[in-house]
Length: 206
Image 1 (cartoon, one colour):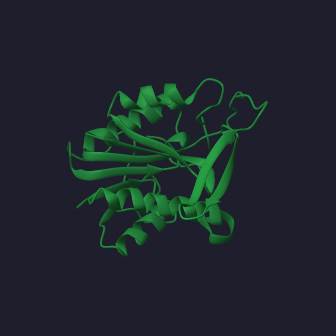
Image 2 (cartoon, helix red, strand yellow; image 1 turned 90 degrees about the vertical axis):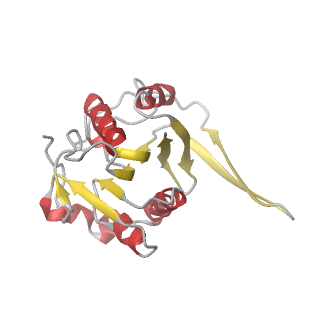
């Protein structure tokens, strides 16, 4: 069983939540809500914001975490989920899997795919440097697009006490991550959050 990296105080509002992270929470709820699930499992609930936001829209979420202080519905390891195959319509983990060594994160994802009846939704840190641009076109609305930062190259990832790996560091380009995770469930889409481009979302489904 993996050990927790931070205690409950890590999720204090002034320390943990900023406008960029709020934007990611919107995408978390939006992606799961569009799947119209009856049952949802969240791995690594953190401060519980996703679960509480979903409750406001009548989406039932159960949580699992190693740390009982976070008040999860279930205490256990992401790499050995204590549930039968296909227990939940949707299984999700937001900014969680990078806290495990890469091989363990794939093991955790395989477990997520196993207990998911239909879909898995995750977000992961993407280290590739980009610039976002917004262009307003009369009668058509806002156009949002990004371009890579010039002269920016992948770097070697160094463990910072929390993240064991990140997408687009030198050993883990996005295509490799997609291929590795897609071994367990087909990828439907992936994108980066415009207001928080460090977060890349993936939606998998059968």
